[in-house]
Image (cartoon, rainbow, N blue to C red; front, side, top):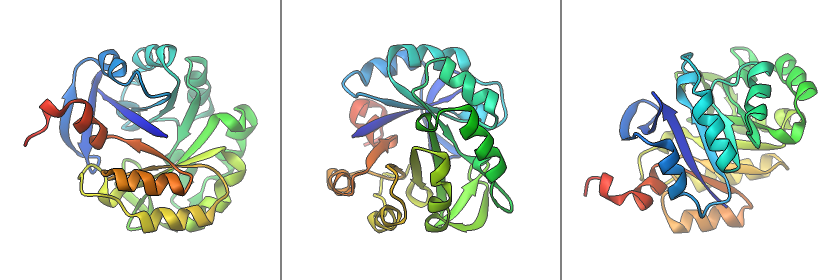
Length: 228
């Protein structure tokens, strides 16, 4: 399944390269959602909340009422997770909060799993050079993807795994990396990061993985916005 991504910043839909350089900005999130009407589910990430700014709860709530959404960005507390679900999120995506500088944040994850049904929790495992990256990908931990996935299984129903090295570049992803992930966990995986071609989508589908698409799907839906 292809899952389009709506990344929100300053109440607009944006696409960033490597999580930093703004490449695309669209002023109407609900209008973008309408463009994705043929897709069964949307991934919504609140980049402002992820960066410690005011969450865009009203926009996210409206998106969730119109379409099944998985919601992430700044989900660092049980209250925030519960608020997102109360606003209509099908699942919440917990990223940096799942980790500390010492490793996996088991205490927080146990508390979260006790307060939120496990089938509503996804854990985002973003990797740069195969090391887990947190806090907007500005810090990497001495943990690899295949080390952490089995340990995180008790707390989630699914993983969102981003190959940061290729994210936003439209140059393709690493299928070898996703194959290693598939062998490391029994849980469903949504793949993200640099996925560009139909061949990659087909390969991920054969692995039983969904694909969260950002830049590649915006290029398809809004080709007039991209330089030739």
